[in-house]
Image (cartoon, rainbow, N blue to C red):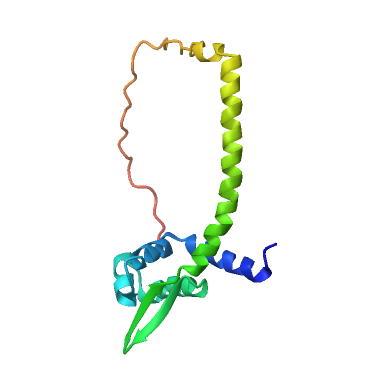
Length: 149
């Protein structure tokens, strides 16, 4: 049974991972800690807007913050991601088993009824149109009425 606290952690992790900007930040942090300025530079957004993304990652526990003088450095924290990976692995096993069963079923159907492979695709009858109709470009008309001021 999943504890209520674990469920909140998973919700926060998946919500944080839902945004492509936050995923790119995590990819950057895989190579080591970076300052906020270094992380924000490639994203082309205001620093306050970028800080909101960092706050979501920090609230989910995916990054940790360390201040060195006036510079704030961020590093990746793998623990919440590992919990999400364990949760996903349970469903990966389920779907792998289901897809394997579907593959076995289709293989048996192919052995029992091989004629479906030899069925000819339907052909589309040719067009009865005498040729291609050229499109006519229309020029814009005169200027429409304007509101008097």
